[in-house]
Length: 253
Ligand SMILES: Nc1ncnc2c1ncn2[C@@H]1O[C@H](COP(=O)(O)OP(=O)(O)OP(=O)(O)O)[C@@H](O)[C@H]1O
Image (cartoon, rainbow, N blue to C red):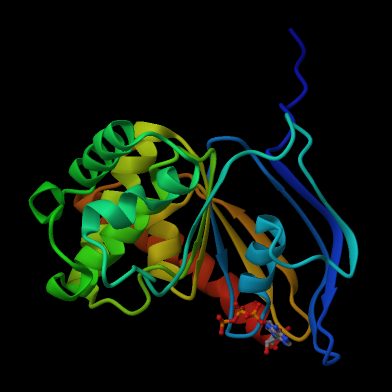
């Protein structure tokens, strides 16, 4: 047995992104993401968080530097956006089943898997409902179920809960954690919220803006199980203070 750390799922090395209009969105970013970890990217508006996520997803090429998959090649990916982007003319079940349909999974099998995912996000009752009949939180649950139905190894989430009220957001934070505990996908979660990043992640990567760069990389020594008791604990408050201090420095940097 070797003591060497396992290779990361994804490794960004010296990644710079300059858009065609000249905006230097990200400069010289080095980032390694461990398998099965839950990571948040936190930073002020415009610091390049979404750009980093899009480069990892392969939706945007870096201008220089590399995005490499050292482990076993590029894993399967799921992407959750801030807007649930559901098809209004399809039921919740059919929206969740869509990636399986695109992958030519036979109908009985895709319905079985879509039903199982809807059950996992607590929406069994809503399988036959259309998006307009669902609340914002329910629509986001459908969107998460759709991203997870193919059982991706890497889940990328770009401020998925930003448009939701705080109570729904807290509930969905818990849902996401329970899904992560059950499935142990690798997660990279973009957020503006210190509280959310600390609640969800084992690691918070704080970015600074203009140009977007890594400012601080904070490992969170928090209980294995995050729940409402953790949210109201002194340990949580102390971790939020640590991350808040780092963010304040990032904004002044
Ligand atoms: N397609 C694009 N073309 C040109 N500039 C872009 C493009 N996408 C993003 N930018 C610019 O790149 C910078 C980083 O944007 P990005 O959306 O990655 O930041 P962010 O940290 O995710 O911001 P926010 O938190 O506000 O969503 C910003 O200055 C933005 O205006």
